[in-house]
Length: 371
Image (cartoon, rainbow, N blue to C red; front, side, top):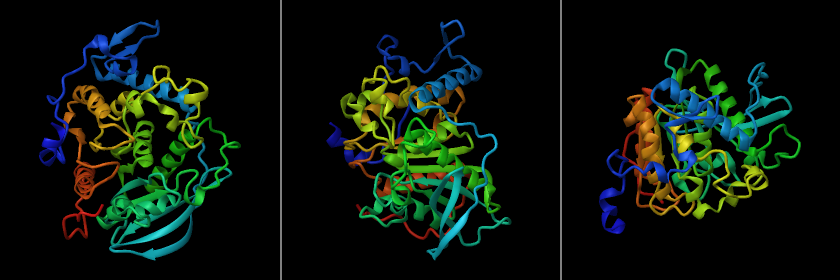
């Protein structure tokens, strides 16, 4: 049946009536989004936005049980930005910069500055997070063998100010020392670095305040979610091939999440048992509400099974409905493998345009059909 419907559903969008809700008795704890635990340890229903904020805090607490705590952001160090190289592009210049996310560390990133961006004509800012690849940030610049990952460069061409950092263990951060940092997991170090990218954008007078978005594919896809969960200054989130609930990730075999760059604690503390992990993506996607969230979840993604997304999206949508923001949650299921095809990729750019109030510049034609 799926194969017969693929030509019609290439960009099928999630609709509230598309899937029946699971029966409450079938729900696992992390799926029960509209309940929170009170101070006496009793389960209480989420009926109001204030109730949801309690549940949301508990979601962040659960994630930090696995990742370690987000360090205090009081007394942040100066970013101390150094420009290493400037390269002209199509409607923008690309700087290679190095800055200080925290004492004792330097992080390298591409910074794309569109022509005409200034204090008099500020633009929205984007944190573009790359997928798994040894060249790191170069992927979102179109330097890899996969052109459907060049969303950093393409958003700069649309007139966004874009920062694209290396993730730890890739690119110029390939030799990152996990053993001697202050973090329990690489995931939390990534969240810290990416929040500092938001700081950098907001310090610029050519970036519109309160109009920061983030986008990523695969590794970058879930890092975009993680950033959005912990940093509510991020107002729109795009995740491509970035998530599915843990029980649906390779049938619940979550060892792929346990390298140093991710969460070794899923093995050392929770014995690779999804039932024991103290958070799940049902909760993380809901924790983005009511901010706009676009998910590209292809039908043939071997990493992040779309069927898990289909189960989680209706539950998260109920939280968006609490805010009268159901249309802010959008999921596309293209006929593709682990990829960010042109049509859905440019659909996500239009989603960012609409929700960040941006009129794209230098956009002359529809996307091509590169693979």
